[in-house]
Image (cartoon, rainbow, N blue to C red):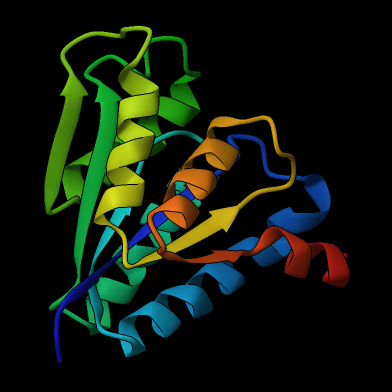
Length: 162
C-alpha cells in the first residue's frame, strides 16, 4: 500500500461542549486515515486542536510504530505568548515528534499562511476542526479543497453530539 499523509487543522479554542468528546473523535479519525494508508501525520503545533491531534497521534503510534508525527511550525518562537501550561504541553509534543519543520526562524506576516499551505500540500487527507469560515483553519481547508484533497471536518459531528 502506498504511504500517504494526513494533516490536521483546527481552531485554537475548543468549544466547551466539545472538550470531553474531541479526543475520541480525533482518535477515530487517525485510525480511519491509517486504514487508508496514512503513515505520516502533520500538525501545525498551535494550542487547541493541533495539540489534541498531536497527542492522539502519539498515543496511536504506541501500537502502530510505523506512524510518524511531523510538526510543521510557522516559526521558532510561536509559543512566545503562551501560558506556562500551554508551553509545557507544546514542549512535550515537540520532544516526542519524529520531525519538526519550521517555515521561518522568526514570526513574519506570511509564516502562518505558508505553514497552512504546507499542511494542505502534504496531506492526502485533511482532518479539520472548523466552526467558522474566517480563520487560518478555514484558509487551510480551502487550500486543501482547491488542491483536490479529501477533507473531513469534525466540528459538525461534535455539534450533533452536543
